[in-house]
Image 1 (cartoon, rainbow, N blue to C red):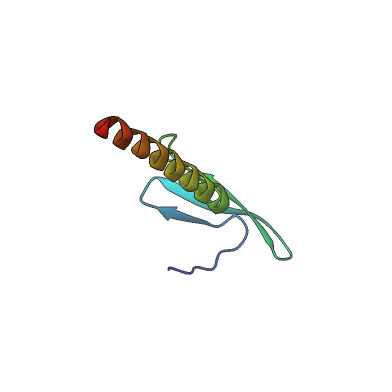
Image 2: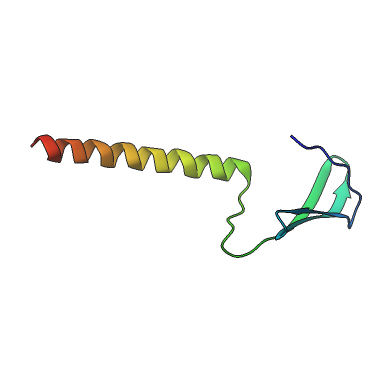
Length: 72
């Protein structure tokens, strides 16, 4: 993991096309802005993990149905 220090209005560039800017700092809370191409999905980690769990559940159910169909 790369750890960087940034101040308000300073930014970090990732992969030449994603910019992360520090918008505001209040106590222990930091507000960031992310500029990325539309085709690059950006999620909060807890939302990303929930999506992954739901996708896995769908694949498990579809895989089970495919096996049932395959074996009759």
